[in-house]
Image (cartoon, rainbow over all chains, first blue to last red; front, side, top):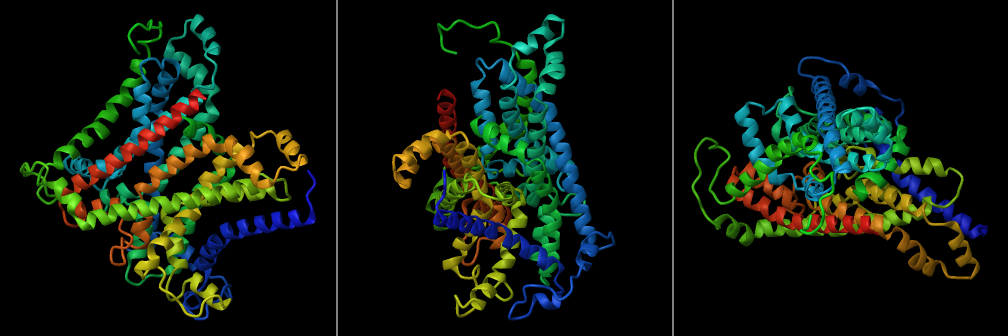
Length: 281
Length: 298
């Protein structure tokens, strides 16, 4: 269809407004992170630093006793450990479960429904018993305690997403494997998972992003360097009395970098996962 | 399976594959849910973990449902949910329609759409808190330097604007999910129908209601319910931006539960608060499952 000049103009105006609305807040976060402290607190506000000040990045990425760098780097380590381990466990348990739900769905409708419901449950419903459980097991303020709790959010989610991925692998392909004497487990690991690999990878990425983003349980179940994750560390920075917003923005940029890079790099796969997988169930 | 249906050979299969998941869900979901239910009928306190709490019957629920504090937090959650989801849907669909057009830079614009979605919630909340800063915030500076506003405002500091400003920050991040889903659905709309309708002189508004909307309604409704459930349990953005203030103006139900249990250490009434929320969420979740079933049947 040909567009009139007016239509083209409106279209590009719309695109411009959209792009600006997405980019400006993020750009301001980036600029704030390299703006010298003296320029961040002047009126009228300056929009561009006279010279970029990278010291905050150095500060956060250098390990030292009782420094913001220590808080940040420990939180980074904890976030990475929790996200990776949880995802691994979720796949180990979720893949067989999703396979069974996809291949033998009879009489198991309620399981899929409860898996979905579990994922959507408000976390406050589990808060107090989980707190008591972790306290009794001595797992409060440990990475393992957090991993245990995250499994209850991420396993159902992974199972749900994996199930819809396994549904796209035609069962006929598996039959030759069964004829050749493979067990059901063998068929799953040697035929179905390799064929559904893009979906499995997408699920893993979603699981990592979800764990990276979680705040509620991390806030309540951790209180020190040993287990605090990035979101909690960042919210602590915000609560400090002498708030250095430049430093907080730097922490924000660094914490957002991994998920943003992953999302942009894997855009196609994630889009497919968002639309076909999690959403249609 | 209903009676009279013949069992397929596969009916009993697959259980060993499901066992680990079911066991874990039973321990970390089933047990806590039942335990929360139990706690909600007792006077349990968070600083007396070892002591056996006394049974109170329905007292905590009566307390919850007559507490102006908790009821107003339920109202705040409802307001937050309705306004932010409505905005996310309208903006999400508009942006999806826009990015579905052919134009130069389309691939880049679509890549941009995933940016807000990928930014962690806490980072988003922190970023907006800085933008809204009453003294040095970019929003005040922008609006006064362009002459749109005479004086600086304390966006998050005044009860009348705080909730709407939090909603704005939430919408900025979350409309992208709606837009991404709508955009994917739009791509399944065949071009020919459109071109024919356009040639026949069907006005653009009618084309949207009669042609586009029916195509995207299914996936869109799923996205709406998903966002509704998410928005109803909102906690993190509130915690970072306002901690429920000023004057409790942004205190949502999740925040109320958190306060009752962890600030006032009232585990029993906290659990009752939580269960009221669970009940409301259960209705929303049931709606979601129903939609999903209908989608699969369609």
